[in-house]
Amino acid sequence: MDRESTIKFLQKQVKTDVLMRHLLGVEAAMQSYARKFGEDEEEWGIAGLVHDFDWEIAPSPEEHPMYGANLLREEGFPEYIVRAVLTHGDHTGIPRESRMEKTLYAVDELSGFIRAVALVRPSKSLDDVAPKSVRKKFKDKGFARDVVREDIIKGAQEMGLDLDEHIAFVTESLKPVAAELGLNTAADS
Image 1: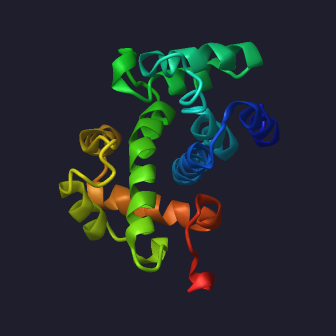
Image 2: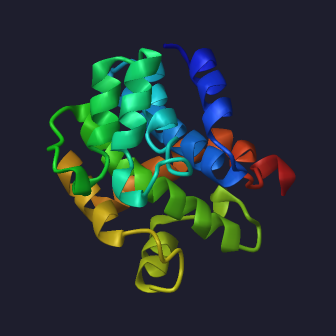
């Protein structure tokens, strides 16, 4: 699979802009970490693109991502991508082993949370998002209430990263795709 065929696959499966923006954000974070670790950026990006594609179509939330994993196998996605998808949540019981799996888990919730923080800033830009502002929003349980803060913290720990470092890195990785995420860019300011 390559990015172009993955996007075509997603266009058939993903129904909302909200989900597509999430997938694009996770893709960007995965590619940035792949670059940092000397891994294949396209492969890691594809894992980010497909990790939640079944969220809207899974028969029940409990069946996500197992439902999607079966569809990915039918479409010919490599097993290491399928495994990364299966390990991006704790509820599957499948332990994360590879660096790709740990990274996908670590950036999933965080990339969405950072986007939400940017959206409530007056500028609606990632340029105004810092680790301190993200941590402040962590404490507000009513803000982005579906985001599991413990997963963000655990993800950074599993990668052996300081949380603020991780937040800053993911924030920077989202900047090149800010417009695709529905955010303002520095040029818009």
